[in-house]
Structures are given as C-alpha cells and as structure tokens.
Length: 431
Image (cartoon, rainbow, N blue to C red):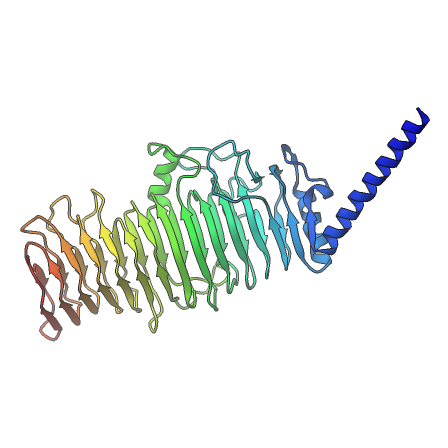
C-alpha cells in the first residue's frame, strides 16, 4: 500500500512538472491558453477577466497567440486585444444557428440597448482576431431587434480579422470610427442585422476579402428581423478609404449593399471621399446594390466582375468616377431602373449585361443618366419588349458616348440634353 501511495505521489509530481513545463514552453513560444487563467467554456461563467488577463500577459511578454479551446465562453464585459496579440480559436468553417456548440464560441451580453456603447472587442495596432464564432445569446427576432454596440472596433495600423463567424451581431465590424490603416479582413461571415462593416479614416490601402453577409442566424424570410434589415440595414459602408481593395464580397436581403460617402473624424468633421477597387462583388436581392454619395474626384471607384440584383444610385453630390466593367445587372419585381445617375463625376459601363428592369412596365429606362458624363460601351440590354427603353439622357448630361452595344428590340435612347451637350451615339445594334 505504501509503495502504491509513493507511486501515486511520484506520478502526480511528474504530471505537475510536465504541465508546468508545457505552460512554460507555450509562454516561451508566445502561446498562451485562456483556460490556464481560469476561463471556462460552460456557457454560464463570466470569462471576461480571464480572457483579458491572459491577453495582457501575452502583451507584457512581447506579444503572442492567446488560444481559445472548444467551448461556449460567456462574456459579461468587453475585451481589449492588445498590440501584437492574436486571440485565436479553433473555428475553421462558417457556423449558423442558435445553439452553437462547435468550435470556440464567444457569447457577449454587455451593451444591450446601446448601439453607441463600448464595442465588445477592441483591436489595436497589429492585433488579430482569428478562428472564433461570436453569438449574442440575448438577441431577439423582432423589429427592431435589440441594439448593441459594434462587435469589433479597430484603432491603429494592421488590425486584422481572419476566419470569424458573427452569428447575429447588430453591428459587426467598425474599422472607421477611429484611424484604422492597412486593415485586413479575410473570411468574415455574419448576419449583421443593422450594419455590416464600416471602413473610414484609412489613409493607406486596406483589404477585405471573402466577406459574406447572409442569414447565419434567422433563416425565416417572414421574420420581423428580416423586415428590419430589408428596410434599415447596410452591409458595407465606405467613408475615407485610400485605395481600398475588396475581393469576393457578398450581401443579401439588405436595404443597401454598398454605400460610399464622405466619412467623419470622431463623428464630427467630414473627411474627403475615398477610392478603391472592388472585384467579384455580389450584392443580391436589395433595393439599392451600390449607393454613391461621393467618391474621390481623381480616382473614384471601380467594380470588376460584379453581380447586382437591383439598382445603382449616384447622388448629385458625387464628384468622382464610378466604373463598372464586366458586371451583370438584373432586377427584383419592384425594381424599375438599374442605374439612376447624377453628380459631376463620369459613370462608365463597359462590357456589362442588363436584364429585367421596369418589370412593372412604367416606361422607365434601364439607365437614367443626369450626371455630367456617361460612357456605355460594349454592353448588352436584354429584353423581349418592343417598348423597353435602354438609356435616358437628362438635361444635366454634358457629354455621353453610347457605342457598340447590343440593344435587343431597338436602340431606344431618349436624349433630353441641351444643345451644348456633346452626345455620341453609334454602332449599336437593335436586334
């Protein structure tokens, strides 16, 4: 018996020594485990202090990776991810539904009812959020749903989000209220009920890739939550961005897909408008796919290989170029036009395809142009109607080039420009 007790004590001592060595090696390598600081993924215990202590420890020792194992980690407070620290879970694919039991799930409850409150997660210069699922357990399927602050807010250069699912945030990612240069987002999946991602005050090229706003929480089209998002929601918001690069971005069932405008500094002074390139972007089933209040006058924005199930609106305040190359447009039942264009900037359509506009047969043209400049080259206007107007040129148009297009059932272009305008229409087929 004594020998068995001695063996047990020896084995226990070896185990303790081994665990200490593992912990020491992890720390030496810059790897930390939140459970070693008391975190519990039981869905009931408040883990705010344990997570923050672990991340602060990593930051004090020069930065590192803070690991979150499988579990449901309740958070009654807010978290600040310090500079050079990565908060990383074991997420590897998008998740959906109410009872999220797979992977590393963070469950915030703070800030309910206050959309202007402190964000749940704050990122700093060179800090990263990776491999996590975030689920608000107290959110409700109502119109309106519970307002919450931003789920993630960044401040500083190189704030990064990699492979994250946000099941039901009210507002998902704020990379605009504070300076947030060279941000990087890749693999963000969310049903953002009100606002998806806001980018502003980025004075050096930011990048977003594979961002997918879709019903990851509420899949019932008749839900009051859907009605709120359809009438109030915006998926992508862009203020002052210098050379923003967006790739493979998608949204569906929002009131506005992408909105471009003059951002503000600290919610006050307006900045200059931004510019960027947007490739393989798909804004699906929305009254307004792209809304442009203003973009940079010297560089503007470009969409390449885009798909838009609705219309484009360019406001009178716009001064920059708006370009669509190789894009497809088709309409929902309520949509009248595909493009309503105003402002001083030139709008370009090159190699685009248009179909199903004016389904209510109100006599509305596919492109209603009242901007100063319009260029439509090599596009196809698909229709079976003899009276389907393709382009309407308003009195504010100073110059237009409409050439080499296929306009089924007739080259129907309405010209209401002034005598001083220079309008060139030619080499279009009406068959």
